[in-house]
Structure formats: structure tokens, C-alpha cells
Image (tube, rainbow, N blue to C red):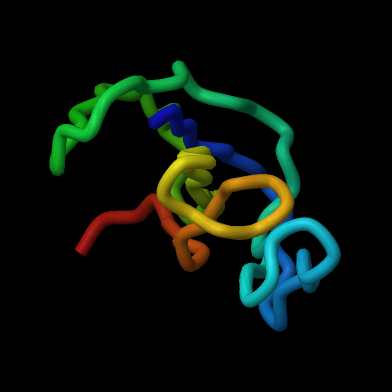
Length: 90
């Protein structure tokens, strides 16, 4: 199993259908930055990011996992839901 996380400043709230290559999956962010790919089946992966001091700034993330032996679609992949992060103080 191979996976990665994409981080972007752009989101697609309704999602873009990936049905031709991954039926039932949608793309909720573009792929501006791809974080380090991860291998294996560990249930938890930890990643530290330096976040700039941009109060009110917003970014988005989504992950994809490729496991052709497990996931039965043309690409052998599955996507997560999209995540939205906002930098701020409370």
C-alpha cells in the first residue's frame, strides 16, 4: 500500500468526480503540494508541518491510497474526504 497527502490553497467543495478511474471517489483539492509518500499499513501516520503565521489563512488537504490488490477499480486507489484548515487564535 502506498499513500500520500496533497495540500493546496484551492478546494472543490462539491468535489470533482473521479469515476472513470476510481468509481465513487471525488477530488476535493488540487495537488499544489504533495507531502512525503508513506508506505505500509500502519493505521496512524504522523507528520509535522511548519505553519506560517498567517492568521485567517486557510488551506485544504486530501489523501489518496493506492492498493491495487485490495481496491478493485481501474487505478486501484481510494481517496479521503477533503479537509479544511484555518489558521487563527481563539
